[in-house]
Image 1 (cartoon, helix red, strand yellow):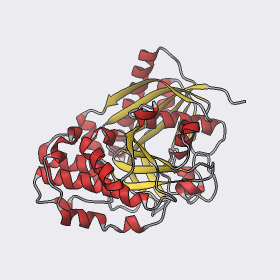
Image 2 (cartoon, one colour):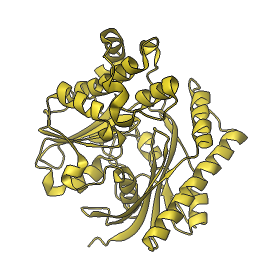
Image 3 (cartoon, rainbow, N blue to C red):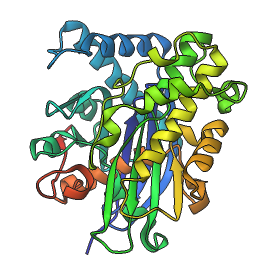
Length: 364
C-alpha cells in the first residue's frame, strides 16, 4: 500500500518571475493534496541576469557555464531555499522531501539537452531535507522531449473527474497541453507554443511593465492579420506530437513597428491561435479545456481562446485546484515517484522509448 508523504514542490517557469513553493501531502499515486502555498518573487536584478544568461546561451550548440553563470545558479538556489523557509514558517510543518525543478535557461530537444539552473545538493544542505532535482534529463536520455512533464500528475489529480476527452492547458511562458481520454493509455501531451513569453517580452519592451495585467493592453488594441499569419506559419505547428520547444523559439520581429496595444493584441491572439492549432493534433476535440498558469488571469487571452477554439474554457479553479500552485505541487509528486522508482514520463507524453523514472536524489 502506498503511504502519504509531506513534500515541498518548487517551480520557477519560463516567465522568470519568481518561485512557487507548495507544501503537499501525496503518495505519488492517486492522492495529492495542497496544504500550503507561497510565492517568492525574484529580485529585478536576478530577473535581469537570467534574461542575460538566456541571451548569452541563445544560438550556442551547448553552452558551458562559466564563473558568472555558476554565481547566478547559486543565487537562484538561494532564492529557492528562502522560499522553502518562508513556506515552512507559515505552515509550521517539516517535509520529508523537496522536489526542485530549477530555472530553465534553454531547452533544446532538437539537440537532446535541456538546462535548468539550480544546485539540488546545495538546496538539500541548506534546507536539511532530501532533495530531488534534474527531472528532465533521464527522459531526454531515453529519446524523449524532456517536456511536458505534468501529464501523469494531471491524470492522477483529475481522477474520476476526467470522464474522457478533457484537456488541461498550462499557460506559463510556454503553453503546454495534456489531453486525456477515458482509458488509462489514451493520452497525449505537447507544447502548444508561446503563451505569456512573447506578450511579457513585448510589454516590457514597450511599456516597462512586467506583464499585461488582466490583458488590459491587448484589449485596447487590434490584431494585425499579417503579423499573426507570419507568427502562425512557423514549421513547429506542422510537427506531430509529442513535441516541445524553447521559450525563445519565436522573436518579436513580426510585431515590431506596431503600437504597444496592437502588438499586445496580436501576440495574445497568436498564443490562442497556437492552442487552436494544437487541438488539431489531439485524437479528439476535448469537450472541456481547463486552464492553469498565469495566462488564465489574462481576460483577453481567455476570450481569444474561447473564440478561436470553440471549446468550453474554464480555469482549473472550476475543479477545485489552485492554478498558481499546480506546477509546484506536481514537482512534489514527482519527487515521491523518484524515491519510489515510478516513471514520470511516457512514450505518449514526451516521446521517450519507454516509461522513464526522472530525477536525481541529493541527501542533506
